[in-house]
Image (cartoon, rainbow, N blue to C red; front, side, top):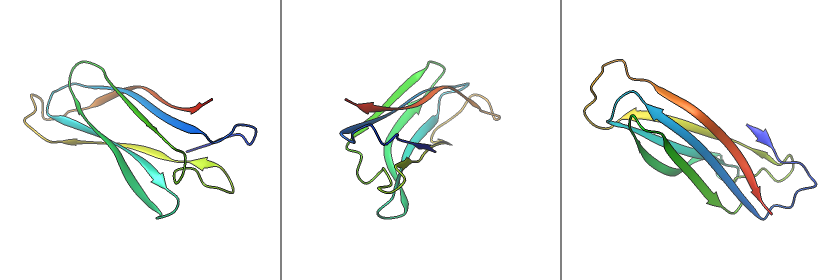
Length: 102
């Protein structure tokens, strides 16, 4: 969760993550909260591996910015979608960040 300062115009919004896993066979689901429908919108599905995977979600702020408070919400979900080489898999999140387009 985060808030956008009032002095910034709502022109464009970017959500960026850098994630890697200890095994292939995993998938990252990046979701943004939709304030109009009160539900999570899946923005990207990114396969994960031993190498870092960078995911960038670009778009217009509506409906992902709450109009009165200018709050934004996101979540990252990881699930197994294929064979893994370790049963106790994990992910390492190096970066999660919001940016506003000028």
